[in-house]
Image 1: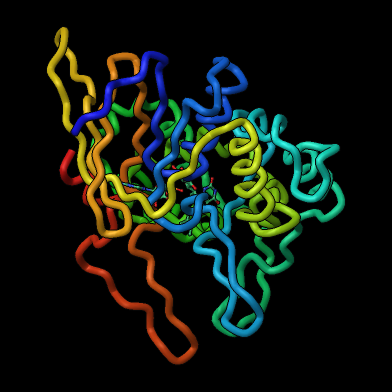
Image 2 (image 1 turned 30 degrees about the horizontal axis):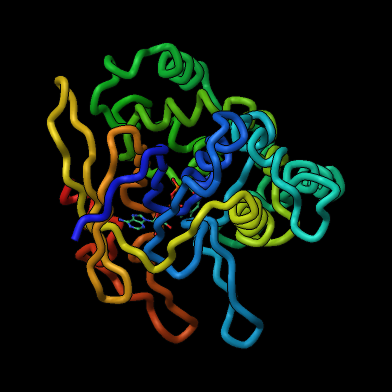
Length: 309
Ligand SMILES: Cc1cc2nc3c(=O)[nH]c(=O)nc-3n(C[C@H](O)[C@H](O)[C@H](O)COP(=O)(O)OP(=O)(O)OC[C@H]3O[C@@H](n4cnc5c(N)ncnc54)[C@H](O)[C@@H]3O)c2cc1C
């Protein structure tokens, strides 16, 4: 039986990563939505997506990624976190707590590059020649449509890949030589300010606790206090679309909770925000004596929904 649709618009978020939670904060804070009209559907038993952090001294600790936030590049996120009270100290915001922590505990890596004999190398000279510099500037000023599908190693001469800069940059941002030149350009435009301090990672900002406890938990608490409903272990598997006025509108979400199917009918004014896929979907854990399982076929709902759409 289909339930009658409510009259005030509702917002549904599929996924509870930093993107969805930030958007929910902004809906309430800046767009004046009521928290109780917002529902967040998450397939995992915990919110936060890739910003995780858990474990104990016996079973081991888990953080599936270490994010290096900078003050200059994360302007929108800091703006959101300026409104969320910090964990354990409600008199200040998450932003203030993180910034204060970093003013006290500076990132100053002393061994960014080592040689084959495990000796620390001086990485302060980036090692560019004139040709590398020209290629770099040319990359920054070339529009994406002209770069097309070019790879990084299509763009730069062999010398570039031997520079300290490339060893530092690729190990900071996880680039391979065959990755897309467009992607490299985007990162360079966003993180240009890191060039003079990339050999110490001096621009990196850390959170006082792991990122789940320092950022995700306070956001979840703030949203819950405003009435937002979190539906965990709820996997969205598909969406029905209606053709309308030259566009498309989602009219139903299909999912599964505790092995049972569910459907959500959407009214015309309802909003749906889908996080498609997740960098940490299908992550598996290894140990000192056990390799992580190599997952060749996507298993989690994150990719099921993406494939179906
Ligand atoms: C190893 C690693 C290092 C990183 N380093 C950095 C860094 O230095 N700096 C930086 O800025 N970023 C870094 N990132 C990236 C950053 O962590 C992610 O970009 C960010 O956390 C993504 O947030 P999100 O909300 O878009 O998605 P996610 O965090 O992936 O959240 C998506 C959520 O949606 C859920 N979901 C998806 N589909 C469904 C569905 N169909 N039904 C129900 N739930 C669903 C997932 O379970 C997940 O919880 C790193 C990531 C990794 C993995």
